[in-house]
Length: 403
Image 1 (tube, rainbow, N blue to C red):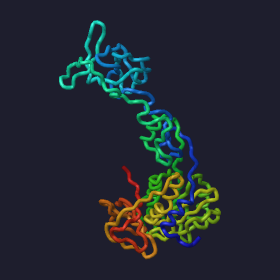
Image 2: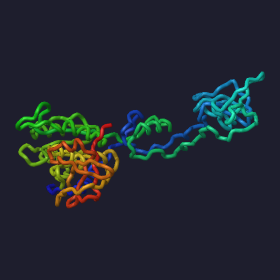
Image 3: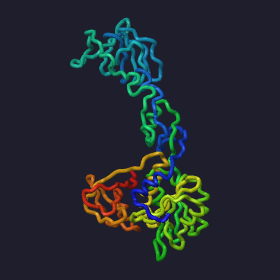
Image 4: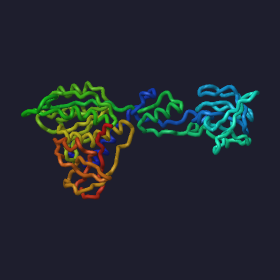
């Protein structure tokens, strides 16, 4: 393959190049951040029984009520039955006894001590005194009826949802101990370039490695679990060995995607009999990005070595591949340009922007080797060829945000 693909086509092709990872059953605490392989449906009614919504007294019939010496607490079995004219102290969440009409809140109750037992009265809301008129509480007052939230079998969360802490709580309440999920794909990050320095100041011929600290957390924000980056010497054999030894679900390389004297990614993937999906994209920066699939089905995304060009490859190819591996659709959102932006006659431009009141405004430093604007950007946008007019919609490409 030698013809670069239009940007939008490259994104679609990348999404179709992978297949979702196989579901696995995990305990609830291990499901956080995974995608649900199947919907969460209620395994029981919620609540599973009629219960008290407030601390107070379970009552039956009209007042006054003869107050039992017993009390009902959450986790205890309810009394066999509550006869008309009787009441029993009850805690929030405790099961209601049969025959109970309502719950009288503690702060609305008055107790009168008598020779033959205590009597319970509702308090008059105006005077605060016991009401001895023989009134009854409206049925269901401060009661959580069985199935109020959902009935057994009712769908609660759709498949494909990313599991959140609230979903874990809901799943536990609904009776789950395990969930079937598609785990985040593991990604091997191979950083190429003998000219890269791991520490210290740049010097003639040597530049700092900006991609080792940038790429893994960006992949994590896309929903993957990136392994610590591996520095690979600029030799064909070293790159071949790392790819062959990797057990990750996906491989991302940085640098060596063009046709220079030490750009070995193409040669190595050909030697491994990989199937070419994308070999160049009509986009600036990042034109020499690539995507291939190894014979075992694992995708390899090749990012250009220039930092902003590499980020362009992440949002163009890595993002849709990871979405498919997770069984999810590609994130597609638009934003309106707030000002005219210079476009390219043939290629899509990926530029950092700030977004204010729904309008995107480009930042200045958008060269392929520059990260200054990206560090301050709210997002990236894709400016289509011959587009870029103020007021026109453009594709919004999120950047990772740490809260």
